Image (cartoon, rainbow, N blue to C red; front, side):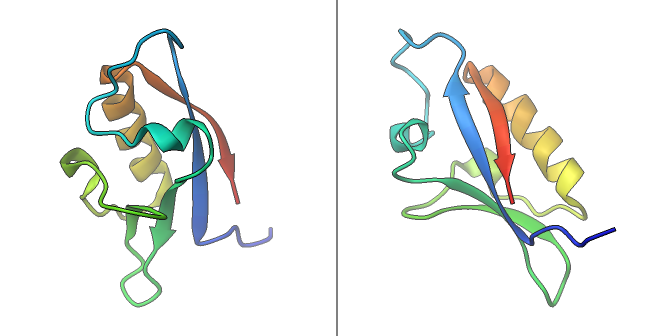
Length: 90
């Protein structure tokens, strides 16, 4: 089994495209201009979120022991903002 990337991009989409309020989530994530990454720190093996530009919302500033837990946390938070994860890019 091949090792997957330690830097994965979450592709996000609004559940209702007409809804303009997405809270503290950067609106550029929907156009691909500021991707939301889930990255693993090679020294601690902990996963965390980061944008290409700027700071992530406070609810996404935690660290996680594996990618699956990080993704599940993001899904719960993003659902509250009416956003869904449509793809994970390695």
